[in-house]
Length: 153
Ligand code: AMP
Ligand code: ZN
Image 1: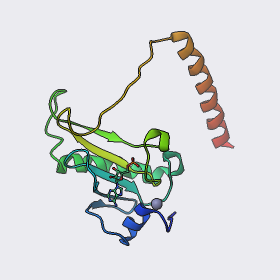
Image 2 (image 1 turned 90 degrees about the horizontal axis):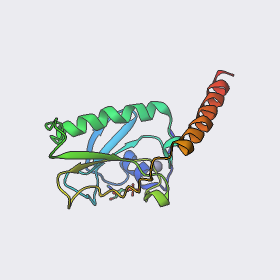
Image 3 (image 1 turned 135 degrees about the vertical axis):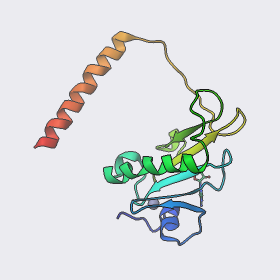
Image 4 (image 1 turned 45 degrees about the vertical axis):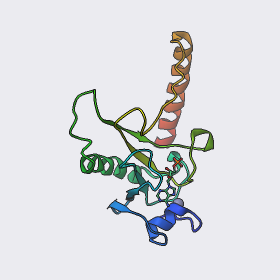
């Protein structure tokens, strides 16, 4: 397991600093955020030190969403199966520009009950440009094909 002695979340996993722990599995750990944006704001982290999503092994990542799902039940966020009313956001920031403060991957589970609390999202959508999208699509498919070929080698 990758760990970093100066990382605050690695210290939480090891119990070196306190946390309000919720679910712990072999591969992940969850606890209340101490500066919540809404009541029930929870963090789920891999038990593997890495700053960004691409640094974390797949098996750790696979463990996280089922933990999130259990936590939505504990918070009774699973009661509303309609589009309206109470909801929640799952957020995972990578890099300072993307609002990441702690450099150990963490997934936020943030209840969204009203406009004042929880996540506020800026969403600068651009007009649809199919020519531009088509070029990007071709480029990305090539990248993915090359990656798949390299994996076979
Ligand atoms: P981010 O901006 O995505 O890096 O979020 C970091 C989050 O970690 C913030 O929501 C903080 O409130 C939270 N946080 C920082 N230190 C602790 C801690 N010791 N225990 C619980 N949550 C923490
Ligand atoms: Zn760490």
